[in-house]
Length: 174
Image (cartoon, rainbow, N blue to C red):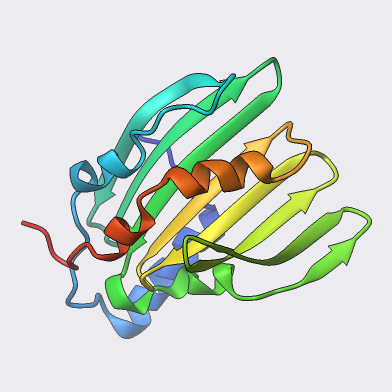
């Protein structure tokens, strides 16, 4: 059974609700095998692969494709890169990459732009960071790390992803 470490249960429930209300869009998701090359990346220097690239495509109740890879370093550092393709042009998770600025004693959230794509960068004082990028109003690319002093490693890995090629993927691959 494939697990979706970055897809939160409330997100799946929200997506299912949107499908019930609006129906499934005409654009079909691509198979996870077409997305795997985007996460088949070398680990950053000093890191190793903790979980090799893997993915899944589901069709019921909501059409979704996700792929991910996980790296680790030292005893407590982890980094995961995930790509989620769901609901084609009506990407309801786009709200997770909106320009939000928040600072508190627990951390911050702020807009970020990587390779020309807008997203949201979050870092918490418990040394957890996350970057969510909206790619072509279709894909959600998430880089999530634990045990990090800042989000620099997340940005560095994001720079290595072929986001322009990902954005150019057709909505239906046979």
